Length: 572
Image (cartoon, rainbow, N blue to C red; front, side, top):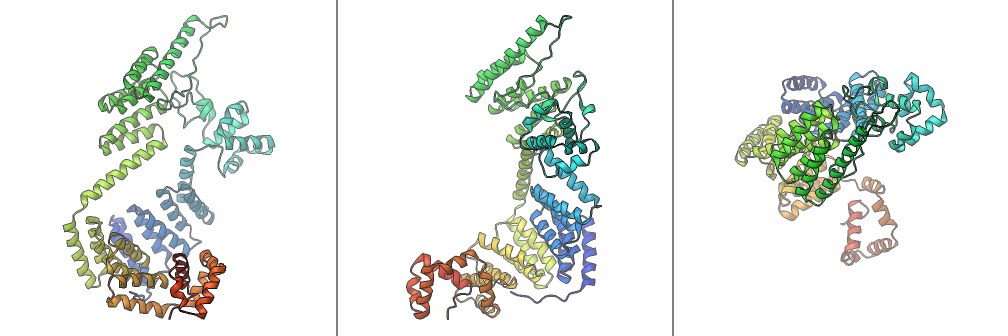
């Protein structure tokens, strides 16, 4: 039902905001949100209130609500940089980095000295570069222009052509390694010092792909799990005084090649799920070349498929221990730690799996491991949510909420309705009650959201449709409001509140405004231009009884209904 707006009182809104801020500092987020909501009711034009409530929603991990409030902040105060920072933070949490980058960039355009926005944008761009081609992106030339060494290179059309090729395919880097300008540009884009990153002593230096350029400096490509596509490791050849390869080196190379051959045989058996044969070949490969730790990781993969969890963990631990002693590539260590995490994930030990995923990510940030960690976190939250469900306690909280609602203490009622929903999220009545609370607080969009959830849980719950109708009516959407009240009357033809709602819709309806708005709808425009429909409309105008006949055709009936809703046809 439509409620009168409270008297605007900026001073009272400011007082409520201060109380909300204090609640935030104490970590009482729900109370803070309620106070900010009351403050907005007193001064809906105050952009800071929406910004503060957005921050509170972020702490509750309610990212959609945080984004809505950030957008409201920007709508009220489009020249306030902090609103864009709020939007960026919400979009990052919703895994929309491109849109987040746009938000932060717009904020920095308004306030170039905003250090928080700068730091957030830099971290976002760095995270994106970690998983992308360093030569691709809209700001490549800007970053190269900012560097004294690479600025001059951009004057050469040939160099710019190479940048375009590298942006399309980073594999072109291999053919451009001799061009020192390309290597300097790569160092700038990766934010590294090539001289410091160069490997001068493999027995004392451990290199990572995050520190050095992709192909030319990373010693080997990550072994694709049992795929057989591994790039053969280059072997250094010791030479005699005359420059000839010694027989010892030749023998060592043959041994490594034989080990790789065994690995390929193991991979072939693995693909056929012949795990016994695969293990035999991997063991032989390890015997021939114990320095290649991918053989051990592949062996661990077999144990994982066999659900030999203890053997899998033990093998991975061996990779970590020996790999660190030998200063192996970070990716090898990372993969072993991730597989231990996968074992715990399979066993349902989610907290333990997250611990090992974190260890893995500390070695090398793999997108797959990030996803697995996120999935483990979601499962933990879902398990906690289910463990919290208690319908009896939910009813107790609902009754407490009802008592406060009767006293017009809506924030307190909201607190208990929120708890009741957590205790029994499948109870439609609680969503309906909370929707009534939102309506009293003039939060009609939130009221509508609760009504729709209520109706989803119980499509035949009359009160849910009625409250939906009043929420839509308050939002000036009379067409949908009428539909909601009509649905309520279909369920209960004698419901007085539903009839009153329909009367209010008729009083508020403005057919002319509806028609103007409907002309922007391509569907309405197509119906009006349809020669067949023009003929139908002419027949209805001359003979109203023709309507009944046309309604028997489902296609024409749907088009007529659309025109009725749009105000082009009125029924008397």
